[in-house]
Every structure is written in C-alpha cells, then in structure tokens.
Amino acid sequence: MADRKTHQSLTPEEQKRRRKRSLALALTLGTLVLLFYVVTIAKLGPGVLQRPM
Amino acid sequence: MSTMSNSLAETHVESLATAGLSQGDVSDFFALLKPRVMFLVVFTALVGMVVSPSNVHPVVAFVSLLMIAVGGGASGALNMWWDADIDAVMTRTRKRPIPAGKIQPGEALAFGVTLAFGSVIILGLVSNWLAAGLLAFTIFFYVVVYSMWLKRTTQQNIVIGGAAGALPPIVAQAAVTGHVALDSVVLFAIIFMWTPPHFWALALVKSGDYQRAGIPMMPNVSGPDATRFQILAYTILLAPLGMAPVALGFGGLAYAIMSLVGGFGMLALAVQVYRLRQGEPAMRVAQQLFGFSILYLFLLFATLLVEHGFGFFRPVFG
Image 1 (cartoon, rainbow over the protein chains, first blue to last red):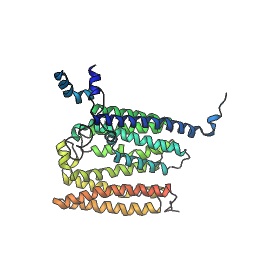
Image 2: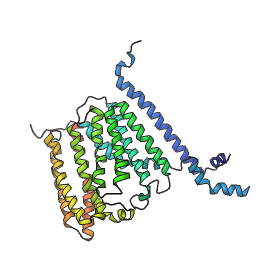
Image 3: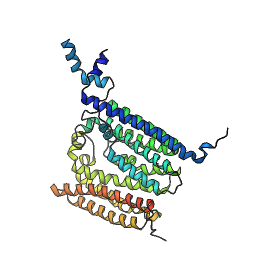
Image 4: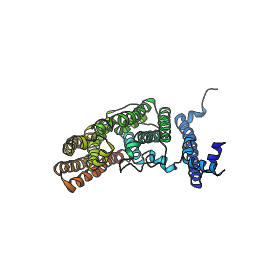
C-alpha cells in the first residue's frame, strides 16, 4: 500500500523521465531482436533454408 | 491525514531510490558510457579491423564493433561507479551523473555489469570466443586493475592502466580474423606509449584537481620536473614507434608522411614542455601538448583507415 502511494506521488517531470527510460529500453530490446535476426541470416547465408529434415 | 502526506513527501526521493525507480534521464545513462572514450575505442578498433585482411561478413564486423563499443561503455560506467567519491571533488568530473545525484551508484553498477556481460557474450556468439575473452580481459583490466587497484596506489597508474585503452585494435582484429597478429600488437604499442605523455600533460595542468582527490599522479608524487622528463622520454620512444607500421608494410606513403611530421610535432612540444618550467608559458605548452597528442593519435589512425578502408594504400617499400 505504501509503495503504491509512493508511485502515485511521481512528479510530472519524473513521469516524463520514466517514459523516456522505458522507450529507450524498448528500443534497445527491439534493436537486439533485429540484430540477432540479421546476424543469423548473415552467418548462415543461403544455408539458412538448407538443412536436413 | 496531513501528517501522513508530509511523511510521504519527505521520504519521496528516498523511496524512489529504494523502490528501485530510477531518477536518471536517458542522457544521464548515456553519459555513464563515457561517449568520447567510446568514440576512441570504436575508432581504434575499426582501424584494427581494416588493417587485417579478412573475409568476414560486414554485418558480423559491424556487430563486433558495436559490442566492443558497448564493452568500452560498460567499463566507463563501472569506472564511474567505483570512482564516484573522487569524481565529486574534481572540477573536471564533478558534473558526472553519480556525483551530480542524477543516478544512484547501484544503478550505475547494475547498468555496467549488464552491458559488460551482454557485450562479451554477444561478441563471443557473433564472432569468436578469443575476441570475447580479450574484451572481457579489457573490461576487467580497466575496472579492476586500473580503477580499483592502480589508480589510487601508484604514480604508474596510467602507464599500466593504459593497456586497457590500447587493447581495442587487438580485440577487433581477433573478432574478424580469429587470431592476434603483429599489426594489431603494433597499434596496441602505439596507443600504450602515447598514453603517458598525453595524460601527464593533462596532469601537469590539472595537478590541483588530482591533489584534492588524493590520486597519486606523477606531478603530485615525483614533482612537475620529473614528470616533464618522463613525458620527453616516452615521446622519444613514441615518435619512432609511430612509424613502425611503415616498416611492417601496413602503413603506406601517406601514413609515413603523417607519422614523421606528427612525430616531430610531438617531440618539439615535449622538448618545450621539458624546457619551460615556470608560470603561464609552462601551463600553456603542457595544454598544447595535451591537445596535439589527441590530434596526433587521431591522424595516425585516420590515415591507416583511409589507406586501407578506401583503397588509398601506396606502399613505401617495393
């Protein structure tokens, strides 16, 4: 309960900073997903679809 | 009811920190990475890559470079976490995020450790584990050997600690070739030998800062004159070493000219620093050497980058 009160008392400036941090984190995670995908394709090359069934 | 509100207000900032909610802005976290140092890391690592003949995929090379940069940033964040107390008393560093109260030390530690492990693991998976091991060693050397041990105990702190700043070309070469060759070791040696004259020139100007923080930099321990002699000695070794890439065949004609002219420039300023010991002119020439040393290293590596990265390589011999 006390924790909830603390979170509710964030000033607008603090809320703005938290939103920016969340966006930066989301962007970083998205970039990592894209990076892993591109690296996988780059390392496997055309062989990505040629594997024994 | 009013008493309860007051109590909540008083504990507001404290609660945010203890509840794990950061107060820092994104730019504060970016500042923890020491962006200028990170640029130098990326730049020297890129040169380490381009001088190494390899047929690695450009995407793999790019991600490797990115991970070396992130590893460098992690070192910076961990250094700021450990050195927050001395950063607070030095004019040059007191506006950093931790002493400025924008980021809690624990946040910087968590941020740095996460980036350090992340960069090493991803580099290992993307390129090879030799490069990842070298990156891990670089971070360990900078944070533990330099920041935690040498920096506050010996005047040779930046000489030995300089190895961490000199390693990126070796890590980069290992990432694209899978081994460490003489080329990148020579680049390592150039940065290693460049570090003492560069930092001691700054230490001569900022000796008051280091004195207040209790850091045993050479001007505070052995005195300014001994420091001037050491600057000259290291520069005498640095100038010919800067030309070693020409002798080894990976520095072309442009590099030969640049390293010769730059080496003479460094030597001329080091001699001036050695001779001028009093008052404003002494400070001014030390400041000039500090500035020129940055330009010198930048030009040496930029020339190698242009020669190898853009096909301007013209051999000096043969």
